[in-house]
Image (cartoon, rainbow over all chains, first blue to last red; front, side):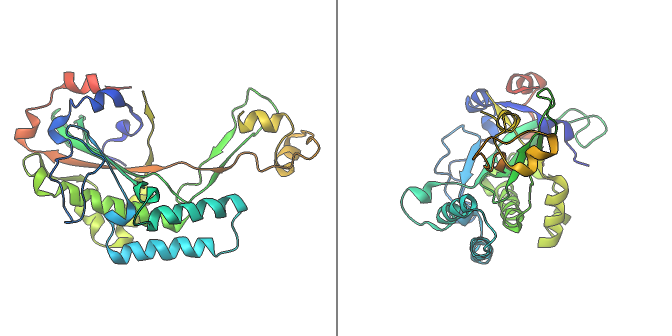
Length: 222
Length: 67
Protein backbone atom coordinates (compact mmCIF):
# COMPACT_ATOMS: atom_id res chain seq x y z
CA UNK A 1 0.00 0.00 0.00
CA UNK A 2 1.26 3.44 -0.83
CA UNK A 3 1.46 5.96 1.95
CA UNK A 4 -0.13 8.65 -0.18
CA UNK A 5 -2.59 6.67 -2.31
CA UNK A 6 -5.15 9.36 -2.99
CA UNK A 7 -2.64 11.79 -4.42
CA UNK A 8 -1.37 9.44 -7.05
CA UNK A 9 -4.30 10.30 -9.26
CA UNK A 10 -4.50 13.97 -8.35
CA UNK A 11 -4.53 16.41 -11.23
CA UNK A 12 -1.84 19.02 -11.14
CA UNK A 13 -2.66 22.46 -12.29
CA UNK A 14 0.53 22.95 -14.24
CA UNK A 15 0.16 26.69 -14.66
CA UNK A 16 -0.10 27.25 -10.95
CA UNK A 17 2.80 24.97 -10.21
CA UNK A 18 4.81 26.99 -12.68
CA UNK A 19 3.82 30.14 -10.85
CA UNK A 20 6.25 29.11 -8.15
CA UNK A 21 3.91 28.89 -5.18
CA UNK A 22 5.94 25.93 -4.02
CA UNK A 23 9.17 27.76 -4.63
CA UNK A 24 10.62 26.67 -1.33
CA UNK A 25 11.31 23.20 -2.67
CA UNK A 26 11.81 24.12 -6.30
CA UNK A 27 15.04 22.95 -7.83
CA UNK A 28 17.92 24.95 -6.43
CA UNK A 29 19.97 26.51 -9.19
CA UNK A 30 23.17 25.13 -7.70
CA UNK A 31 21.92 21.58 -7.55
CA UNK A 32 24.65 19.28 -8.81
CA UNK A 33 24.46 16.11 -6.71
CA UNK A 34 26.60 13.96 -8.99
CA UNK A 35 29.01 16.65 -10.04
CA UNK A 36 27.89 16.30 -13.65
CA UNK A 37 24.24 17.25 -13.53
CA UNK A 38 22.98 20.70 -14.28
CA UNK A 39 19.26 21.55 -14.24
CA UNK A 40 19.55 23.16 -17.65
CA UNK A 41 15.82 23.09 -18.31
CA UNK A 42 14.88 24.33 -14.92
CA UNK A 43 14.64 28.03 -14.16
CA UNK A 44 14.34 29.58 -10.75
CA UNK A 45 11.02 28.71 -9.13
CA UNK A 46 10.22 25.96 -11.60
CA UNK A 47 9.47 22.71 -9.79
CA UNK A 48 10.18 20.51 -12.79
CA UNK A 49 13.47 18.93 -13.65
CA UNK A 50 13.97 16.91 -16.79
CA UNK A 51 17.13 15.04 -17.40
CA UNK A 52 18.63 12.44 -19.67
CA UNK A 53 19.03 8.83 -18.65
CA UNK A 54 22.74 9.10 -19.39
CA UNK A 55 22.93 11.96 -16.88
CA UNK A 56 21.18 10.10 -14.08
CA UNK A 57 23.07 6.82 -14.40
CA UNK A 58 26.60 5.72 -13.67
CA UNK A 59 28.57 4.10 -16.49
CA UNK A 60 27.60 0.57 -15.45
CA UNK A 61 23.88 1.30 -15.41
CA UNK A 62 24.10 3.33 -18.61
CA UNK A 63 25.96 0.60 -20.46
CA UNK A 64 23.35 -1.88 -19.24
CA UNK A 65 20.62 0.30 -20.75
CA UNK A 66 22.51 0.52 -24.06
CA UNK A 67 23.02 -3.25 -24.14
CA UNK A 68 19.38 -3.86 -23.27
CA UNK A 69 17.98 -1.62 -26.01
CA UNK A 70 20.46 -3.08 -28.51
CA UNK A 71 19.27 -6.58 -27.59
CA UNK A 72 15.68 -5.49 -28.24
CA UNK A 73 16.63 -3.98 -31.60
CA UNK A 74 18.50 -7.12 -32.62
CA UNK A 75 15.87 -9.52 -31.31
CA UNK A 76 14.11 -9.87 -34.64
CA UNK A 77 10.74 -9.83 -32.90
CA UNK A 78 9.81 -6.17 -33.38
CA UNK A 79 7.28 -4.76 -35.80
CA UNK A 80 8.77 -2.36 -38.39
CA UNK A 81 7.26 0.57 -36.48
CA UNK A 82 8.68 -0.60 -33.15
CA UNK A 83 12.08 -1.18 -34.73
CA UNK A 84 12.13 2.34 -36.16
CA UNK A 85 11.01 3.84 -32.85
CA UNK A 86 13.51 1.89 -30.78
CA UNK A 87 16.35 3.06 -33.03
CA UNK A 88 15.24 6.64 -32.48
CA UNK A 89 15.06 6.04 -28.72
CA UNK A 90 18.54 4.52 -28.81
CA UNK A 91 19.78 7.68 -30.50
CA UNK A 92 18.22 9.77 -27.74
CA UNK A 93 19.89 7.58 -25.16
CA UNK A 94 23.36 7.71 -26.68
CA UNK A 95 23.64 11.09 -28.40
CA UNK A 96 26.31 13.40 -27.06
CA UNK A 97 25.57 16.40 -29.29
CA UNK A 98 22.88 17.84 -31.52
CA UNK A 99 19.12 17.87 -31.08
CA UNK A 100 18.95 14.21 -30.08
CA UNK A 101 21.09 15.02 -27.06
CA UNK A 102 18.36 17.37 -25.85
CA UNK A 103 15.70 14.68 -25.42
CA UNK A 104 15.12 13.95 -21.75
CA UNK A 105 13.78 10.59 -20.64
CA UNK A 106 13.62 11.28 -16.92
CA UNK A 107 11.19 13.63 -15.20
CA UNK A 108 11.26 14.92 -11.62
CA UNK A 109 8.49 17.10 -10.18
CA UNK A 110 8.95 18.98 -6.95
CA UNK A 111 5.75 19.42 -4.97
CA UNK A 112 4.26 18.93 -1.52
CA UNK A 113 1.40 17.01 0.05
CA UNK A 114 -0.47 17.34 3.34
CA UNK A 115 -0.43 14.52 5.85
CA UNK A 116 -3.40 12.18 6.02
CA UNK A 117 -4.92 10.91 9.29
CA UNK A 118 -3.79 7.37 10.03
CA UNK A 119 -0.66 7.71 7.94
CA UNK A 120 2.68 9.44 8.54
CA UNK A 121 2.22 13.18 8.91
CA UNK A 122 -1.29 12.44 10.22
CA UNK A 123 -1.16 15.68 12.17
CA UNK A 124 -1.72 17.57 8.94
CA UNK A 125 1.82 18.78 8.45
CA UNK A 126 3.30 18.71 4.98
CA UNK A 127 5.70 16.39 3.28
CA UNK A 128 7.73 16.86 0.13
CA UNK A 129 6.39 14.99 -2.86
CA UNK A 130 8.74 14.09 -5.68
CA UNK A 131 7.02 12.09 -8.41
CA UNK A 132 9.66 10.70 -10.74
CA UNK A 133 8.88 9.23 -14.15
CA UNK A 134 10.44 7.55 -17.18
CA UNK A 135 8.69 9.28 -20.06
CA UNK A 136 10.02 7.31 -23.05
CA UNK A 137 9.54 3.63 -22.21
CA UNK A 138 9.99 0.74 -24.65
CA UNK A 139 6.90 -1.17 -23.54
CA UNK A 140 4.02 -1.06 -25.99
CA UNK A 141 0.39 -1.73 -25.18
CA UNK A 142 -2.88 -1.72 -27.07
CA UNK A 143 -6.39 -0.28 -27.28
CA UNK A 144 -9.06 -2.59 -28.71
CA UNK A 145 -12.81 -2.86 -28.70
CA UNK A 146 -14.33 -5.47 -26.40
CA UNK A 147 -17.81 -5.34 -27.92
CA UNK A 148 -19.52 -4.40 -31.17
CA UNK A 149 -21.60 -1.98 -29.12
CA UNK A 150 -20.20 1.53 -29.66
CA UNK A 151 -21.28 2.49 -26.14
CA UNK A 152 -18.98 -0.12 -24.57
CA UNK A 153 -15.63 1.38 -23.66
CA UNK A 154 -12.61 -0.17 -25.37
CA UNK A 155 -10.10 -2.18 -23.38
CA UNK A 156 -6.88 -0.29 -22.74
CA UNK A 157 -3.86 -2.43 -21.92
CA UNK A 158 -0.77 -0.22 -21.41
CA UNK A 159 1.45 -3.29 -20.87
CA UNK A 160 3.53 -1.34 -18.38
CA UNK A 161 7.04 -2.62 -17.62
CA UNK A 162 6.79 -5.36 -20.23
CA UNK A 163 10.37 -4.58 -21.23
CA UNK A 164 13.21 -4.96 -18.74
CA UNK A 165 14.66 -1.71 -20.10
CA UNK A 166 11.78 0.22 -18.53
CA UNK A 167 12.34 -1.29 -15.10
CA UNK A 168 16.06 -0.55 -15.30
CA UNK A 169 15.34 3.04 -16.32
CA UNK A 170 12.86 3.58 -13.49
CA UNK A 171 15.33 2.04 -11.06
CA UNK A 172 18.00 4.54 -12.13
CA UNK A 173 15.57 7.44 -11.98
CA UNK A 174 14.43 6.57 -8.45
CA UNK A 175 18.06 6.36 -7.34
CA UNK A 176 18.64 9.79 -8.80
CA UNK A 177 15.55 11.14 -7.03
CA UNK A 178 17.03 9.89 -3.79
CA UNK A 179 20.33 11.60 -4.62
CA UNK A 180 18.43 14.83 -5.28
CA UNK A 181 16.73 14.62 -1.88
CA UNK A 182 20.08 14.16 -0.20
CA UNK A 183 21.75 17.05 -1.99
CA UNK A 184 23.11 19.77 0.23
CA UNK A 185 20.77 22.24 -1.44
CA UNK A 186 17.80 20.52 0.16
CA UNK A 187 19.37 20.31 3.60
CA UNK A 188 17.14 23.01 5.08
CA UNK A 189 13.94 21.56 3.60
CA UNK A 190 14.11 17.75 3.62
CA UNK A 191 14.83 15.83 6.81
CA UNK A 192 14.45 12.23 5.62
CA UNK A 193 12.65 9.75 3.38
CA UNK A 194 9.10 8.42 3.79
CA UNK A 195 8.74 6.48 0.55
CA UNK A 196 10.56 4.57 -0.76
CA UNK A 197 11.99 3.49 2.60
CA UNK A 198 15.76 3.17 2.87
CA UNK A 199 15.38 -0.62 2.79
CA UNK A 200 14.20 -0.38 -0.83
CA UNK A 201 17.69 0.77 -1.81
CA UNK A 202 19.45 -2.22 -0.23
CA UNK A 203 19.94 -3.84 -3.66
CA UNK A 204 18.81 -3.49 -7.26
CA UNK A 205 16.41 -6.40 -6.84
CA UNK A 206 14.90 -4.81 -3.72
CA UNK A 207 14.39 -1.58 -5.64
CA UNK A 208 12.90 -3.45 -8.60
CA UNK A 209 10.41 -5.07 -6.24
CA UNK A 210 9.48 -1.68 -4.86
CA UNK A 211 9.06 -0.22 -8.36
CA UNK A 212 6.89 -3.14 -9.47
CA UNK A 213 4.65 -2.69 -6.42
CA UNK A 214 4.38 1.09 -6.34
CA UNK A 215 4.65 2.39 -9.91
CA UNK A 216 1.54 4.39 -10.76
CA UNK A 217 -0.02 6.27 -13.64
CA UNK A 218 0.35 10.04 -13.60
CA UNK A 219 -1.73 12.49 -15.59
CA UNK A 220 -1.48 16.20 -16.18
CA UNK A 221 -4.22 18.59 -17.15
CA UNK A 222 -4.32 22.30 -17.51
CA UNK B 1 -10.11 8.91 -35.18
CA UNK B 2 -9.86 6.51 -32.26
CA UNK B 3 -9.01 2.80 -32.45
CA UNK B 4 -12.54 2.09 -31.22
CA UNK B 5 -14.17 3.98 -34.11
CA UNK B 6 -11.81 2.43 -36.65
CA UNK B 7 -12.41 -1.12 -35.44
CA UNK B 8 -16.18 -0.65 -35.25
CA UNK B 9 -15.98 0.61 -38.85
CA UNK B 10 -14.20 -2.51 -40.07
CA UNK B 11 -10.69 -1.15 -40.08
CA UNK B 12 -8.12 -3.07 -38.06
CA UNK B 13 -6.81 -6.52 -37.27
CA UNK B 14 -9.09 -9.34 -38.37
CA UNK B 15 -8.20 -11.24 -35.20
CA UNK B 16 -9.92 -8.47 -33.22
CA UNK B 17 -12.81 -7.76 -35.58
CA UNK B 18 -13.81 -11.42 -35.95
CA UNK B 19 -14.37 -11.76 -32.20
CA UNK B 20 -17.23 -9.29 -32.44
CA UNK B 21 -18.66 -10.22 -35.83
CA UNK B 22 -17.43 -7.08 -37.54
CA UNK B 23 -16.70 -7.45 -41.25
CA UNK B 24 -13.30 -6.14 -42.23
CA UNK B 25 -13.25 -3.64 -45.08
CA UNK B 26 -11.20 -4.78 -48.06
CA UNK B 27 -7.48 -4.11 -47.67
CA UNK B 28 -7.90 -2.80 -44.13
CA UNK B 29 -5.81 -5.36 -42.24
CA UNK B 30 -3.99 -2.66 -40.27
CA UNK B 31 -2.37 -2.64 -36.79
CA UNK B 32 -5.11 -0.42 -35.36
CA UNK B 33 -4.90 0.03 -31.60
CA UNK B 34 -1.36 -1.35 -31.36
CA UNK B 35 1.79 0.35 -30.13
CA UNK B 36 0.21 2.24 -27.24
CA UNK B 37 2.81 4.08 -25.20
CA UNK B 38 2.31 5.38 -21.67
CA UNK B 39 4.60 6.21 -18.80
CA UNK B 40 4.69 5.44 -15.10
CA UNK B 41 5.82 7.34 -12.08
CA UNK B 42 7.12 6.46 -8.66
CA UNK B 43 5.91 8.67 -5.86
CA UNK B 44 8.86 9.63 -3.68
CA UNK B 45 7.94 11.37 -0.44
CA UNK B 46 10.03 12.99 2.27
CA UNK B 47 9.63 14.57 5.68
CA UNK B 48 10.06 18.32 5.64
CA UNK B 49 12.03 20.18 8.28
CA UNK B 50 10.24 22.48 10.70
CA UNK B 51 11.64 25.41 8.77
CA UNK B 52 10.09 24.13 5.55
CA UNK B 53 6.80 23.25 7.24
CA UNK B 54 6.26 26.87 8.13
CA UNK B 55 5.94 27.72 4.45
CA UNK B 56 2.86 25.57 3.88
CA UNK B 57 -0.79 25.72 4.80
CA UNK B 58 -3.86 23.84 3.55
CA UNK B 59 -4.88 27.01 1.70
CA UNK B 60 -1.69 26.94 -0.35
CA UNK B 61 -2.23 23.28 -1.11
CA UNK B 62 -5.82 23.80 -2.24
CA UNK B 63 -4.77 26.51 -4.64
CA UNK B 64 -2.22 24.27 -6.30
CA UNK B 65 -4.04 20.96 -6.60
CA UNK B 66 -7.40 20.27 -8.13
CA UNK B 67 -9.20 17.00 -7.62
